[in-house]
Length: 270
Image (cartoon, rainbow, N blue to C red; front, side):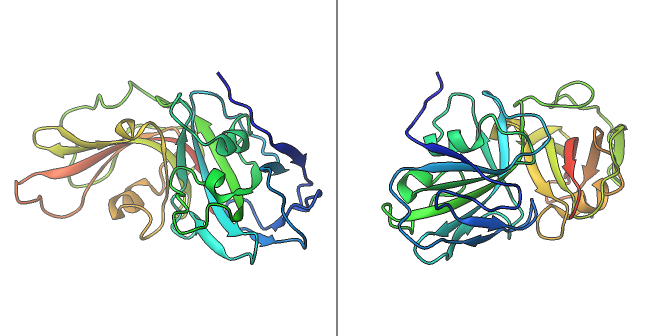
């Protein structure tokens, strides 16, 4: 059952100018936004505003919603938390698990590519990957969401579902197991993937996006993705299934990790 709460949904123009005393949020989608706090008290009721609506699929119950987040204090505009610098979006699983009501209202039924702002006391604004532990629970915060998209937990573009993978994967190079028909992937792209990490020989699965609840987002940039992914996925295509081995000799047990990755979607670099 969907939960409703006392929020005022205020629509704003795509340039980021909000009315009803909401902050002015500017900047390109996918980049850290600039937030100008207006004069006056923010009020105590949570408020949600759609600053710009995307053109992609709407998020739906059961989805894993991926979003970048930036949190500012209303009192002085200082940044308290965010995902843009680390380039690691939050994953919010709407499968019946407990999701803050404020986040539910901000993220559910939003087209991919939307920018949404939430103004709320910190106690009601914290969410997955954004705990706000150091913020006074009564302090009002401004939370900006860039909604990358919503994806079914078992989303895939090609082939049989992971973790079914072929034997005999090459260990000296990345390889395309099933080609994709989407755009070519460039360095700096934000990818939505399903993946598993398998130790070979033995084919033991040591990590998987399915264990984490569904699709993950990763930026193909140094420090934001495994080096093997950066080397192996650039030049591939959206919709492909690729095998990417870790470079160099095997570990102490003589084995090596091979990633098998389904590239579900991509937001190319700005």
